[in-house]
Image 1 (cartoon, rainbow, N blue to C red):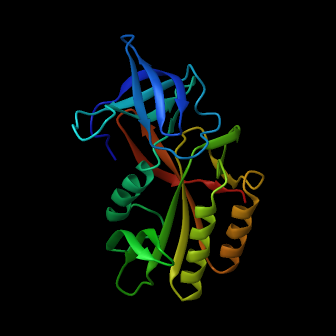
Image 2: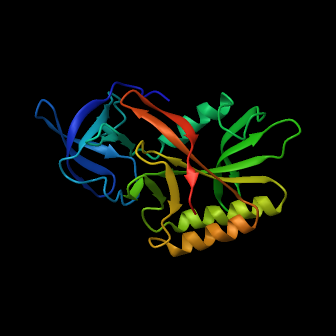
Length: 234
């Protein structure tokens, strides 16, 4: 998945009201960027961080910059835009590049299911069970090399797990797919201490037949692509 316009480097001044960030461009100008991430962004919103913004000239948008990446001191990246995983995964699904999903020729994003919900992807293929795939963006890392989800309490996430469990019980294929938007992690676990209810919902869904998959990403200021599976340490 390529970014639509060339990203520009900046320094984070502060994130506030969840969806806003004051930033300083390299030429000294201060701008307000949209932060497309409703989570806590624990450890990812410290003033002074080097970040990358995507400019736009869309007259319908109030803010002319969107915050897309954090660049860490070691040259590794974290993607902060929670809309990116679905865009990157759609391209990977359609290209048949996601392990375990070869043969699913039809990729339907944002399909209604469950109780007033939409599944991120409904995949269909001849001779294969319908696959309901829920996607979560993972950006939290409190231990070196370990990515965790969630970074804040998510009742909505627990609801999605319950609906996936219902699909599995009905004979469909149901998959909880965690996409790690960090290039510094090679393991994944649940942050059960942050949201015990989500962890309990996950255990119940797994017992009901919901599959778990975790994939990494390749991240550069040019774009984000789906990478190899990451070890699940749950």
